[in-house]
Length: 418
Ligand code: HEM
Image 1 (cartoon, helix red, strand yellow):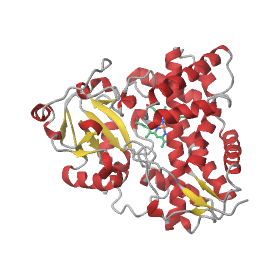
Image 2: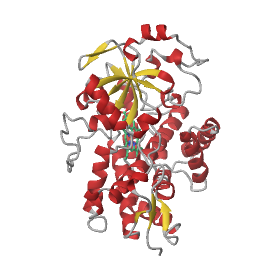
Image 3: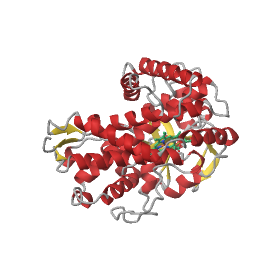
Image 4: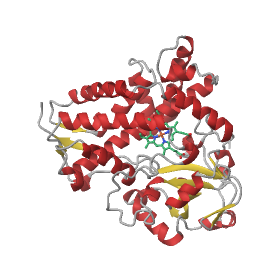
């Protein structure tokens, strides 16, 4: 995997002999998928059950885990299904510019390991994130949200994604992770360029790594009291590379997921009759809308992924050693076996898969941090802009054409200027 050259072009016959179940499989990319992902999950479930063959961008084969029971099974058996993508039996088909590649490459983080090393890293992370005081964080988030709203409150209009939901978790996490405010604009710009996967993506990634590496080294020399210092001082003795990779993973995955949680919650509260009537009313509706989002529009809609250690069966479907599995959080949450009437709310029920399941589940302190940032952001916004409404019809809102995350491209609103 490390020596990627030009992709091997398999003839149709060779592809069919290596991946027979994937001949003519549905595409987990492209316009049809982006227009209606749930339509695709329903069709696949009707035809294949809880596990279906799909093609990723570039025609690469994978299995999508659609069923709640199957999702639970895969995540509960790390001896059979692991994060180590080096096992993949289709690496020879991957080209160096394949857009999914950055998500699959080996990293020296908790994200990657299994077994004893995963446990060790997980403890380090829990310990470091455990220094965060939720009340202090709430106050900090209120100030950040207020500052962001100050920048547009006089205009009477805003895009709540680019002007609020995106920068909010970047600024909050940057503070927790001890990124000095002078460095935040550059890091945020490079991180967005990396995620947009445009021409500058590779350079932006290297610049961001260099900046964060410098900050991590500085914390080793003169530690402070935040998460990065705690990581740097960890008794487990992380190498420089490991420290930087853990730092990057937390910042990267954390800010994207929280940003989409904020954006998707605001969309629901502005568009969905279950919440629009209570928008200016109780704060309890914020918590309910946030929970509904975790079921209906989870920030990580599909996860890449797990790899099959040895030939196994998942609900009767045979998967071969080295096959790639895509965990579909969105499909598992909507599985009719556990939610026969999806329209019925799941209030108070937190058995969704939005934070994953099993040993690689999102660490609890990370979930709590994300919840404080998202909830404070939404509450402050509704307090400051009590008459905020959508500036377009709900059906004109556009989701980002993304396979892995679920978030809006923009959320234009209007309100009384102040
Ligand atoms: C609040 C919104 C968040 C959501 C919806 C979310 C979602 C997830 C999910 C679904 C996974 C599991 C991936 C898998 O099964 O392979 C995960 C893992 C992870 N998340 Fe989160 N996350 C959130 C916030 C955060 C934050 C704020 C941080 C860091 C500060 C963070 C750090 C991590 C890490 C390090 C892992 C990997 C854990 C492991 O592999 O053992 N997450 N997250």
